[in-house]
Length: 212
Image (cartoon, rainbow, N blue to C red):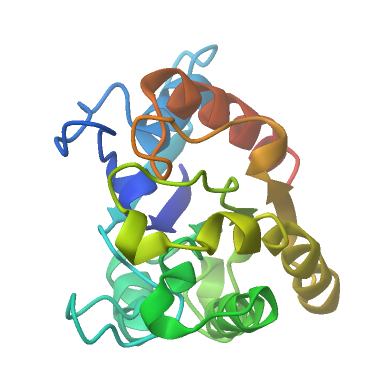
């Protein structure tokens, strides 16, 4: 079976906007992705591992929400799931929090650190490098729920896709600008509604089929 690791934050975890609960297994985009990839197969050919953590950053240590540094946790996670054909990374939203004084360029460099760590991890088939899909998160909206945390972040988030595309060209990673196909919920301006999870899964499925 081909194995995909989905490494992300609350939108990979399945945080429900407006309630703070968690979507069920069928709704969350990694599990929907697995279902779509195996839909026409007599036997399952794809296995999807979920690794979503609320508040996860690319490489920042959060002084308020501890243990959220995505780079610090990445290699142990990769090694626990190896061999991996593809690692799909969807991070950067939490890097835009005011407490990090972020710039879109800095966030993209955090993503580049993750891509390089994956490529040098020796956690692919035959201890080679897994292929990497970088998913740029959709732009934020001014949040009625997380306004103090993300104040000013909606404008910054619109520039992420440009810088993410550049680091993918530099590193050879595949790229998806998710903002071209999905939008965050106006309920909180940060998280995805259930239809967006399915739409994202369908788009990612099209991409990963062409990567292996």
